[in-house]
Length: 472
Image (spheres, rainbow, N blue to C red):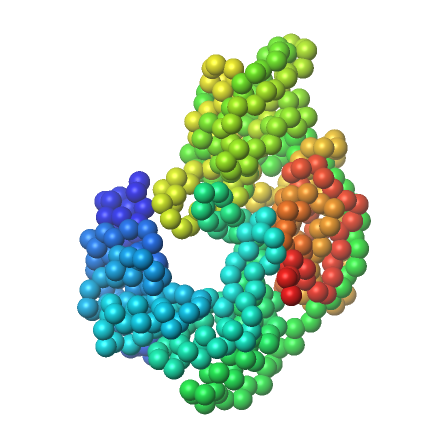
């Protein structure tokens, strides 16, 4: 399979998808009284390729399934991106940028001539990746000045107007020489916060936009209530290895398979085997592994590798006994959604496990999308230092938004009444997870943490203010 190309099978799947998608969106076009005023062909394709046959195939497919509004493309105004991503005179090219409109707009105009100038993505902030030094934010005054410059010459679409959340395992990732997965928060320093509050940037933008169009007065009907529910103590806990068969059915294969070959898309995958008698292993390697692996011998963590470390040879000692169990827990940290690595996004262990000079065979595969945590058996044994599940109870009398602080916890994900609110990692910059009020209910609520590093605290805290690792 070759994505974003005129590869026959990819276009077939795209056609199948569009055949269903356009049943929903075609009636919503402005020609039929709906809100859709234009449609975009692909997204920033000029950063990826210049296959005009592919872009034309999408164009034709969209028209075939009922698109009647004007079409646009959208690319950055740098290098060859605009030229590579545009199609023809019937499709308006637009540009994506976050600053220096005095440079970007002339570049766009040189390509489209005397046609409407449009900043399709005006980046008012940026997303955060795990390991960033701080939360990304843009100066309000500078951003408002850039907005004014754009509107003085053309049109704008604000990205992001409203901050969002990468709930569950749905965050994406970049890969510029190293993997940089997005954090759970997609607040983006947006005009409205992740939880819906109006910001100084909103007020500054409103002032700028009012120069060009009359803005009606709006009375907001919703009051956003944020509540501190205080500290919660761990009520129950169990190690993953001791409840494994309650949440996953093993699939035996001679060789390791990535999660996609086993019908899994997101989460974790665990490989387990018996490696026999105790011995020293001078060369232990994970081949074609993605994205983060933790290796356990008889339940003890002996190796952790992440991204570029994966595949590097390591030394491992198996205990002096007849049988040794080997567990390898691999986490899908988020698929790369930009650049040439789009075509190499299998997760898990693709090419095998080398023990000294041979590829070891005989593996049980446990898929762990963690979509059934209600099956976790807390009567199992808890062992310190191993991946585990931790259960909390929250009594709620009044429902409101809240923010879960995970100080003292290592890495993992958190579930509120069975809903995966996202990943956490002590690495930062994000230090709390947003829990929308609708995730809670009056009475007893259940919070479950799945933690992989064996680094835990006795409490979690639910506060009425977030901690995103703000630089301001």
